[in-house]
Amino acid sequence: MIDWYGTWCGPCMRFASKYEELSNRPQYSDVVFSKADVDRVDCSSLDLPEINSVPTFFILKDGRVINAVLGADQARLEEAIKSASSK
Image 1 (cartoon, rainbow, N blue to C red):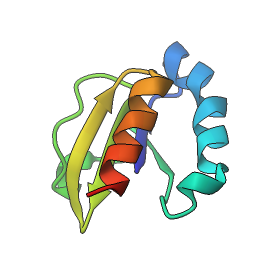
Image 2: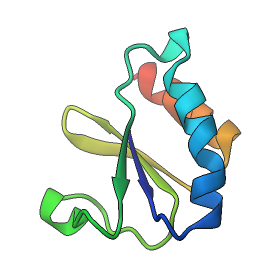
Image 3: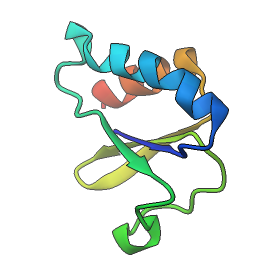
């Protein structure tokens, strides 16, 4: 999973601690949680979908995006993680 964020983005900064808390949950131990600053990493060079808003969370499996969650919505993000784990 990649959390695309901006250091200037209020919702991104407020959600950062929740994202870290999710990454430490035992039930998600098989998920790799990473972060990427949209001002420092060019996602177009990574063959990923365009990012139009932050935070955006990409869930990848076998090197391709299988789900995206836009916005700092913990419930939607957890549902997407669970859905990806069951595939």
